[in-house]
Length: 212
Image (cartoon, rainbow, N blue to C red; front, side, top):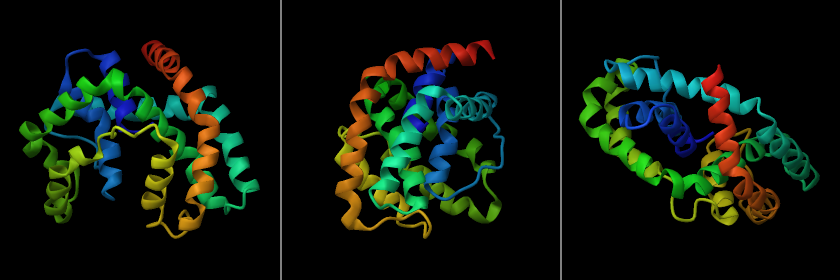
C-alpha cells in the first residue's frame, strides 16, 4: 500500500486522529526520500500510527486481492520483455499507486488533515532519523505534501510515467523510457478492476485488521 491508502485505513481504525493518520503514512514518506526510520517519535499517536502502518503492510502483502493482481501482472510484464527486476517492481508498486488514486475521493479530507498536522509535529519527528540525516530529513518533510496523490493518480499512463521516475534511480529496477507505453498498457488491464473493487477491499482489509 502507498501513503494515501494507509491514511484511509488508519482513519477507519481511529476516526478524528490526524496524528495517527500521519504516522501511518510516515514510513512511505520516508522511503520516498531514501530515509530509514528508527522506529519511534516523541508523540505517542504518531508512533502508534507507524506501528499500524507495518501491520497494514503485512496484511496487504499477503492478501489475495493484491496477489491476484500482482502475480499475473508480473508474468504479463515478463512476457512483454521487461527484465525480472522491473517486472516485479512495476507489478508490485503500480497497483499500489492505482489503488491510492481510486481512494483519493474517499480519503482526501483525511490526507489533507494528516499533512496539515505535520507542521505542528516537526520537532517531534526529528528523532526518527540518524543525527547526520536530520537536516536533509527536515527539508524532505517540507516537501512532504508533494507526495499526495494527484488528480491523475489512477490514470495508468500517469502511473507508468511515475514508476519510471521512481525506479530509474535503482539500477536493478529501472526500465527504459521506451517501455513506458507498454507498462501503461499492462497497467490498464488491471486498473478498472482495482477501481471497481477498491472500496470493498478496503472494507475487508480494515475488518481483518480490527480482528487481529
